[in-house]
Image (tube, rainbow, N blue to C red; front, side, top):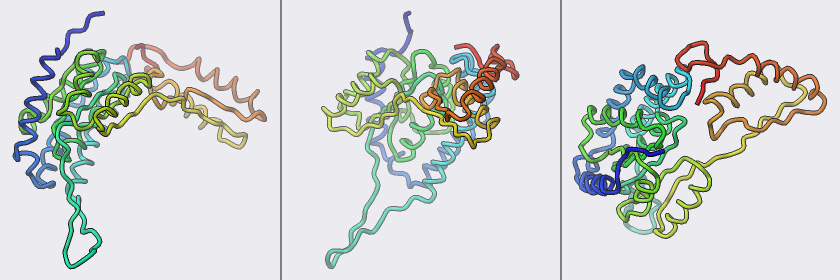
Length: 293
């Protein structure tokens, strides 16, 4: 499969612009509550475009429209939350050790890269982009090659918010081209990555060479445990949602199940029957419970 996306030269050009934009006091020099206004406008832009965002995400990922609509609302909420955090953000007077006063002050790191997976792009992107912008950084976002449309739509909304140009760029492309650049380049001061464990190990090694902080959200095997005194109807509903939402493509999917022996023979057939009754179909159909990838 050949992907059309940003080249390394595109990435380097975006990096140059990000470094210049972040050094400009037009953003980093704003008081926190002033940056909050822009984040609020981004949240409002996401809400105003939520139906389009949900549809794009469904087209890109195959997730049901019901799920992608909820994710669009979640993304707007993330930007609103960070705006609220800025409104109440405090630095601190540190403990005095002599006849002087010292102050702990938060400062932006510089340029931050965000690398996100395909399965929940609007929410995953917001969880990385909103706090980085709130802190006064520039952000370079690399969405998954499989699902770039929502990230590009977000770039349009961010631009309309009045954020100074160069502070936010979307670079859809292959990991070997863009992903490596957004980790290894000396201008990158922090990386936030959500994705596969093997890629995360490689990224951690690259970050260690630079002594650069990195946030890794990797794959997992999340267990559900059912005890004999449980509400079985509630347990079955939770298991089905945990396993089959996002068509099962989630790092927090309930991909293992432990059932107490005393109820095993009763519970498992009920779960199997409920699984067989799930409606598989068109992700745009409101009755669909499991959509194709």
